[in-house]
Amino acid sequence: MIYETHAHYDDEAFAEDREVLLAGLPEKGIGRVVNIGASLTSCETTLKLMEKYPHVYGAIGIHPSETAELNEENFARLKIWCMHEKCVAVGEIGLDYHWPEPERAIQKKWFIRQLELARELKLPVVIHSRDAAKDTVDIMREQHAEELGGIIHCFSYTKETAEVFLDMGFYIGIGGVITFKNAKKLKEAVEFIPLEKIVVETDSPYLAPEPNRGKRNNSLNLPYIIDEIAAIKQVTREEVEKITWENAEKIYDCV
Ligand code: NI
Image (tube, rainbow, N blue to C red; front, side, top):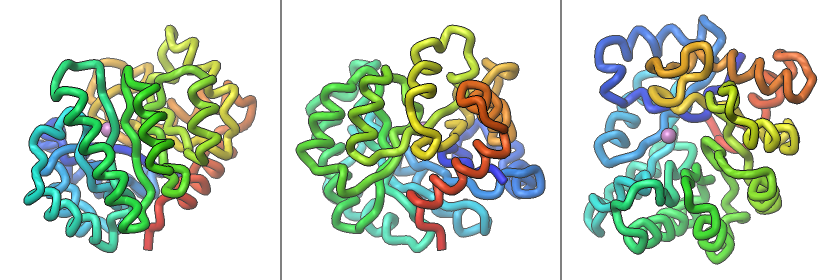
C-alpha cells in the first residue's frame, strides 16, 4: 500500500469527482491520504473529508501565501481545529518568496506562530519553503523545529540544503517533479537522501508526474514517483512503497 502524505482534495479542481476518487483510493493501492490545509476554507473542508473517510487524515495550517487572512480571532479557531483527533500535523506552513505577496514580515510572523502552535499541541509540522531556504532554516533553528519534526514538503533545494533539514531530523517529501527530465538537482538530492528519510506525495491537484505532466494530479499517480525513486536508489518499487509507508507512520500519528 502507498501512503499519500500530501494532497489537496479540498481544491475546487476536484469539485466534480472528489467523492468517487477519494472513496476508490484504497482498493487501488493508496492506503492512506493526508489532506493538507492551506487556507481557512481549505482547512474546514479538510475537517469534513477526514471525518467522512476512514483512510483520510488531515493537516491543519495556513500556507505562507494565504497568511494575510490570519488574525488573532481566526487563529484561535485554527487551534481548535488542530485539536481534532484526526489532525496529524500543523501544515502546510512556511515561507514562499516566489510571489511578492504577502510581504515577508507577515509570512514570517505567522510561520513562527504556527510553529509555536505545533509545539503547544505536540504535533509535527509540514513545511512549505520556496525560494526561501535561508530564512526557513534560520526560523526553524530559532524555534527549535528539530523538537517538532515533520516533513519538508515538495523539496526543491540542493542536496546541501537537504542535509541541513536531515540534521534537524526532518523527512523529505518527494513529488512529481522527480519524474521531470530537467530535475537534475532534485535527482541528485534524492540519491543523497537516505530512503529511510523520504516520504512520497503528489501535492494534488498540482505537479502531476510524467507521463501526466500538466494534467490535474491525483494520488493514483504516486506509482510514477515511486518508480523514479526506485530507479535512483536501485531498489524495487515494493521496497520504496514499504519504507516510505513506515516513514510516514513515524511522522503522522494516525489513530
Ligand atoms: Ni501543498
